[in-house]
Length: 387
Picture 1 (tube, rainbow, N blue to C red):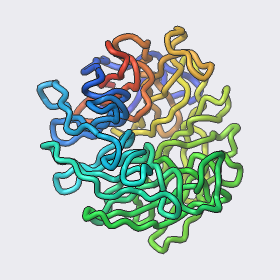
Picture 2: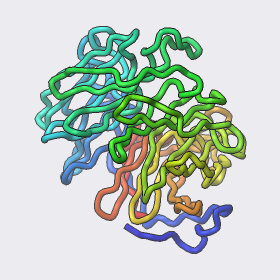
Picture 3: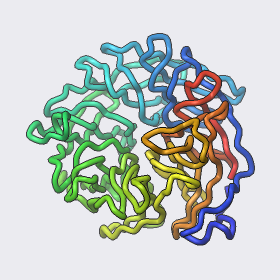
Picture 4: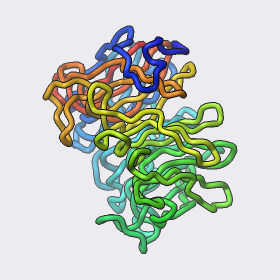
């Protein structure tokens, strides 16, 4: 992939013109295969992913797109003890895929599941709510030391409440045999509340984000060493630095990069930020809605010295995808570590899709991603773009 952006993108305050070599819709979802696809994982020559709804039981699916271009459903979630609404990315460990469902399981508080490439699915663990944690949302899992690590958005410390949520979430570890242990229970302030992000492991320390809580109740970046003594590395203020970091972090050359879905300098449209290991934060870009995008729920993918991401709304000025008072169907963008941003593609809400909620995966010379809506059945799409 390219290692530098065009000259138009080198000015951090300038939004460059469309620069991609090509955008192609690879697949349009319809109910039986799933609807509302989440993130993708590239393994070999195939793309594996989850759809939050649709499928045989309307509880979501695990799917694979092979080299033939056809999409095959590996598993239809059945709700109940099986799990429902898978949202996070899949990870691979020893040839088996692992993921989470937000709901379902023995207690309807979500699950950790495994699925083989042949479609054999198994619930490894059902969350119990309460002190144990509940509803692992967009996070997906981290593979480290042969085990799986993740976050739950709710449950944990019952004395901590956010809005109608009981418990402010947890960090957990689960083995492939299904043995689970809570590593940390969030308290709201000053550490953070309601994480929905994936975790990353840097030198044995886990890092992630929380949607809310922190010193200013606008979310935090936290660190959790093996000792279990968690601390907030940074608390977001809302303006102008951002609020509600939904996605996890990306570490590049000793610096953390991420997004906030809200906050920033322009109309609460979100930001891209950089953060040093010592806790010094800087805003690389504040989204404006049009022409650059708004609500970057997805995290960042690093490739060739450039960071790539998506925004759920904003971009074009058409009215096909008005949401939250924001016009536009979302964007795909590239940004340098110095803040130069280029818009690679603006979604239009037509057959090419709308509202890219999840991040991108890099494979070969292309990026692959999903849109939550749009396509021929308005159930979302898989797309490819070559920056």
